[in-house]
Image (cartoon, rainbow, N blue to C red; front, side, top):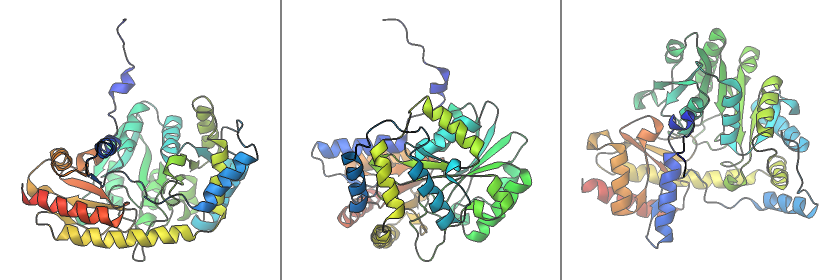
Length: 390
């Protein structure tokens, strides 16, 4: 067999630790082990019936052929309508591309915008794939650490100081994975001022925009001003808000030349997104929205319980997430690295959690409470036993 010389770009990145731990938890559960998994950011609810019905109807109507690389025109229009209605962003369908999940929208953006030598500012803790995508494109991730004391939010001064002549893009994620924090409208406006002042691009990852608690509000940075809008790119999708993780439906919105470039990349990589699934996405946007409220109430109840249980465990500390469905826990006082902590936790107590090192922040772990209450109660009992035995 000839030697296999892989492309150097592959050596720049590491596999997703969140997916690896989630896969290990599923494999252990399949082997009959009583696993409590807090790993994957995946709602445990079924996709709402009206969305499934629309996809089934599309199948019955023969919507099974190739479609436009940028997405079905009706869905692109529905997304543009949603962005205008919900986010006060004046996009037309020509400013939208439908992608194979929210992750794919970000990958297409990075491939179209970033090249060798470009710098991309990423606040930490960050979603695991942001820096890896940048490195695959030959760019340089510029990681800006944030702390619990600042609620894991990058400040305008931090952003300003991180900007260099090579800066091309700033990655903003609110509500946040992994911390659950939400930037206030005033904080978003202050960051927008820096983006405009420096004349850089900002991509706003808004995949968790519908999952908010205790009066928190979501403001898209592009809605702050006309100048901010000109420099904003929106990434979003259907996985979290509508419990459509396996449907692989996301979208990107931005200037038409950028969308055309991403469409070109998509046409040579994946072609169009699954045709009949896109009709389910139209139903998600244009149909009843009570499913979002129902799931939000369940997440809020779980959030309260997991916060209370965490704060009863000596050595652990956490804030109160304002959005998404993650509890971000500080374990620094325990004196054990996060990967070792999570490895022992799943091996010894069958509890799956994600180490903070995956998010660029050692001394922390992330728990997803997008799971049922019984799992939360049992899993937190086991976590308490584990910490007590360290």
